[in-house]
Length: 349
Image 1 (cartoon, rainbow, N blue to C red):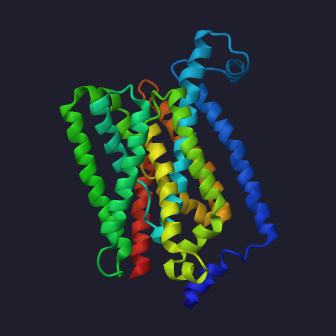
Image 2 (image 1 turned 90 degrees about the vertical axis):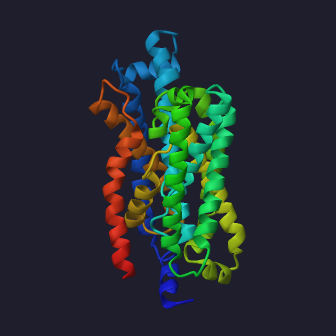
């Protein structure tokens, strides 16, 4: 093990209890902010709804129009944003760990594009009513894309593997996005069904959609929370993981399974929302540190908070239209990605 790897490994265990208390306080604050953001999101729309009315709809439902709007449209939208944001942020953190690549994320390595293409392909054959079918197709598309990027990005000498993974993901993303666009051009009914969804949108999500996808994503989140030390070891490289008694192949397969559950479920709910899995893990790593005991829950809450806030901001700025959250995230994430790519290039030179 090199001196650099030894120092990095030590950083996972050197935190004092006082620092842990600070992290716990920050995590608690974020956790309190999340329901506040969700309530704000539920209250937004063509008709503003008060906090009291939201509580009445949840605890004293009377069948009125406002209560129906809250329970069948706005609450499912908020829940979908929470699940999608948390899932994408955690999957981005895990992908960066197992590939040891700071540019890795579901959107940049083709996972989102694979899931989106599979969903559109399924809608073309089965129609918009087959919710259970397109959920499985999202998971399948995410899995195939992840495997293809990893296999082709690992071919050849090990030198430059990080850049090869990013380039392979970019090529696969462009290819699958082109295929998705071609399908939508030739299938007008599919285009009408997923027009907003393909840009990354929470519009039109139902409680049935949330109930179908939430169990898979919750399993993925539970798995990520259960193995923080293994993820930390994988982030130090396969050789270090072996010296710590881990089987890199097994744990990489487990990590990819978690990514597929989280990213595939997020795409099925909200479409291919980009940059969440890139921006949030880096911010958390800079502010919280590399300890996966903390980064996983911080990513879950911060990702959910970012997506639901971005969706709400888009609805405030463009009240007359249903502005896709994917566009808002692109406006936030693109400048961050440019800065990060330059920082990585300077660091490797």
